[in-house]
Image (tube, rainbow, N blue to C red; front, side, top):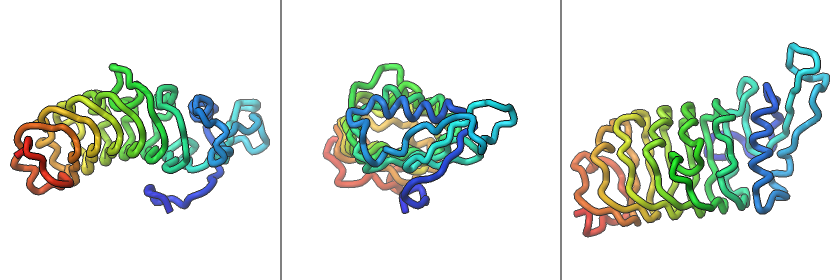
Length: 236
């Protein structure tokens, strides 16, 4: 059983179009270890099969038996490839082509690379995941800033990107992430003060920011939240 509550293993999937399947395959093609045996099932089946759900004769129907990919109503809904041994980046992952993706877990792989300045968190299209409620990319090798575009993910409830090399300040998100309940940013290189705007996230009850380079006072309202680890002197 994985973190998303689904059984591990291969799932038979039928996509409403080839776009979502192609998105995953194009991303896989950029991996340094694209022959990863765990992702061997990430292949595109022949189109136009007798089992096609399309009403139009000859319309493409992309069918995949994809490791740790779950579909709902013909669309990719969950992606969980934690500890899959992936070596690569997220730069070629077109998140905008997976608009119904609501759970992403990429933790404990070897995802690395620079982060372009126009992005929200890791890939440029991250902010287009407006339906996502969980995003996990912990224990990788990603670096660069976390920008305010992360606030576009208005349905986000859990964000965990600890044990990377993310740097710069924690962005001022205002109340855009009003559904956020869990925020784990510990063990990075984040710096600057804890933004006052986090105090507006009324649903936030699990906050871990330890082992960074943060400075300044801790907001009084954070006394009921879990910051994790010892409080460094610069935050007293």
